[in-house]
Length: 369
Image 1: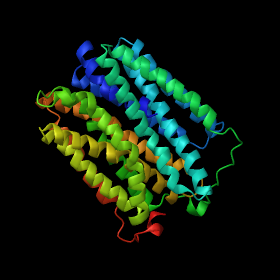
Image 2: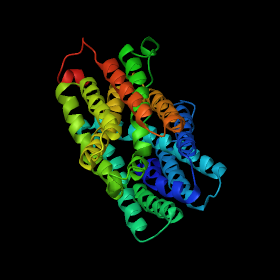
Image 3: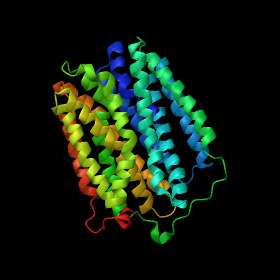
Image 4: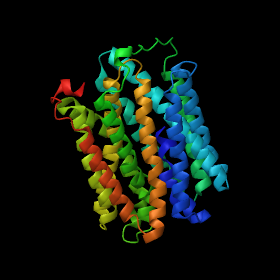
């Protein structure tokens, strides 16, 4: 999923150069992916969806891999929009169903700390795609080959998942009682904050490679900038879930949003290569961690089947990240800069941090639950 969701970022500069895509075009393509993510999250959260969770999970992973590779065969905006839309639907299904499967099993086994391993997969996918893109580009391969190779690697990963995820019969998730059918106030605030986080991270996550390539002072670091994001993402979930267990998931979520806001602002305010690398590390070191903390907290604030809450969370996130790239692309056209949209994104992250802080919650393990 990390490949399917995020490989657009390092490939985008090559597509812009070869196809003459404008920043607005690039933003619309990214938003098509996030529109699919939004609608996929809503579909995945409905209780009327037939079949088992494992089947949907594997089918979505297959769609993600195929739609990723097929981008290398497209030639028109319509094809790019359609394929990225399908990839977005697939990503949402993977996140909702994989998280429901894994978090439920870990909770039942009283090993919730291992959720960090699950969410670290996204960072691993980013690292793999970054190494693959930079290596193939160094050998002179064009943007089509970059998509095809990443799709092929995703299919290989799918084969491993089929073997590793057990096919045992699934227990029915518990039903929510009518007394507890409403949404907890803290959960509602978390859902809104999660949507703001989606908007806040996605502009930098979509355009950071483009930002670096279009800045002569720091263009030399383009081959490694997305790799830095991925490498920082891999251990980040373990760090932030540890902070969540120690101080409460809501506080960990807020602190991570604050750190990410600094990274987003630095990405457009800094002109020194080292500072831009630091901003990439702050982005990678927080966005998967925030995702994990948000979903873990939503799972614990849920009554009954957690898929409903996870679906609402993912839908809010999808709405925020759908708006972000289009807004950034249009704003870029007004001033030939990502400065304004990135600072607006940083402000959204600050608001998200404020929303999740609950003065009545106690620090420590009880607050984390």
